[in-house]
Image (cartoon, rainbow, N blue to C red; front, side, top):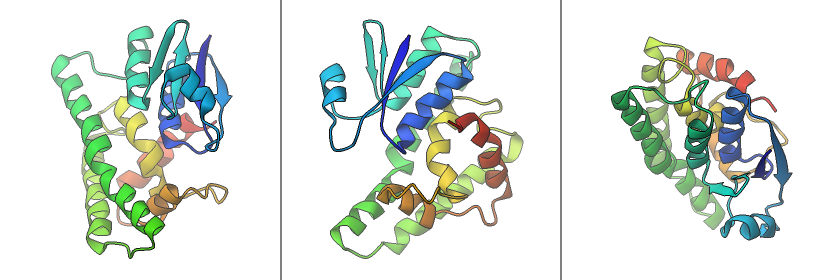
Length: 200
């Protein structure tokens, strides 16, 4: 049985649960609190969730876990079989993690320090949503069929549509307040389309 170490409202955990459900893999959850990360540190040597345990295998980092699940259970796939298309998807995932997430993280950090929000960062977040609108011009999902790219982006971009009032994480409030589906109908439709795959 797969075991997933998780924490409430984690966007990175949701990436993994979407992949697990897409592949029809059964798993059990171990929920930790942000105040006590010792169970995760004990099992993985680092404090961040998600962590997946599969027998003797321990895998940390959300998209590394998604790639591991693809190797473990190739069907139904989350990555293209064609090497060039897979490379494109991996570039997108790397861009999302290294570039897309920069502005909302920086805005959240500024709020924590009591500093004003940088308008240029807010504008850049909007421009990046416009790129999603363009990516969705040819299909229902980011790379045609539902894929690792959708698992990667949805838990963060979904806040452009709404936020559960019980979810009061600062980073998530930033994603909610600084993103919008207004004027982006394809993005709004994609969020609605993917949402059932992310339901707990």
